[in-house]
Image (cartoon, rainbow, N blue to C red; front, top):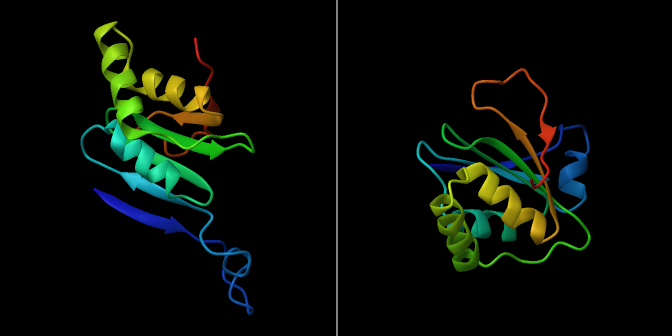
Length: 123
């Protein structure tokens, strides 16, 4: 499991991202699946976008909107369990939880490094 900051390109002045207040977001990577607390902690702790990547969930690019609300890890986790009990995939459950709280989620399958992220909708 790892966590790293995304920084803009470095120029003579030290980079636009640094001057604007630091990292543009973060990447959260795990060999297994994510929990509700993982998602809430990473998204709430980011000043920008958050990318989650795992073989199970693929890659999710989460963007805060102006109206985005903080996530509660227990609430996201409970929604994840309820959704899985109903046959919904983990990815779909996370997308639904995040969308309901005002985030926009883009997805890319795990082995599609050269492919574009596609905006996810709640079905």
